[in-house]
Image (tube, rainbow, N blue to C red):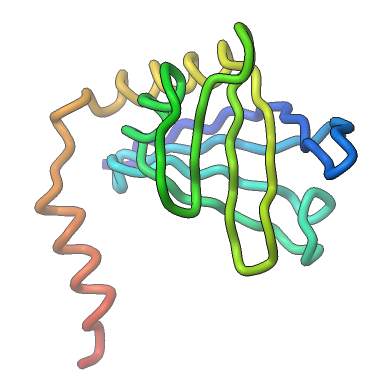
Length: 137
């Protein structure tokens, strides 16, 4: 499968001073990796000055739009009636970004139009992962 969804999205980075700085990003989903959501940030939105992509479970996004979800590097929770907060934890620190909840929901609905919930071919995902891991061994 080669179905890909890309949706530009405007976020707001919450600073240590509780100010919000506009940030642009792109949500991406591909049928080739049906369990994952990719969130791409351009160089001007990152500390390292290079493109950065965060990858997390589509199910985590689904859960986080309704209630706090996640215990690892990515945590998602509602933030008021119209926004959703994503926390990104890395060795470099913590980034808090708010996103319009409606835009995240629209993206999520689009992903389910490509691969329905529960219809993910997990075996193929595992096979590709193992192949990449052991390629050349």
